[in-house]
Amino acid sequence: MGWKAAALLVENRTTADIVREIDVFRPGSREVEMVEAWYELAVAQIGAWAVFFSGGKRHPDLIATLSKDTRVFAFDLNSVYTSYGFDYFVDGRCVRSAHYTERECVRSEGPMLAAERKLKVPKWGHDDDWVLAVMHRVIGVGAGDLEEATYTVLEP
Image (cartoon, rainbow, N blue to C red; front, side, top):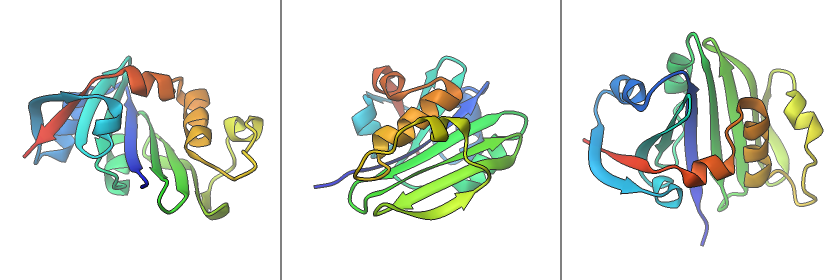
């Protein structure tokens, strides 16, 4: 059985900012750990970064909107389709988008980030660890930070 996760992290914003932008959901009373947050609409604050797990779905319009005057790092990880990738936005524009499926690059926009060049790609291809390692090098938030956070599930 596989899994999938999609999230975006927004610098210098709060979870309330993300909820306000979504506008159809509100924070509920249920709190979960990261593995459960993958399958929910859930938010957490990790230092200066607001995190939004989006139930395994990408939200490119939300990324573009939230990245105005700041940075957003979004990732999607899907073990079922062996699909892993990220989008990095700065001030409303995509600086880098890199997505891989079954070891093949299916989307590449912008120049490769220094973090990508410095990280060795596993022999089996790009994976979740690689994507999260890129994120850690680019924004300073890593897999461990995501795992330690407590997420509030959003409700309609």
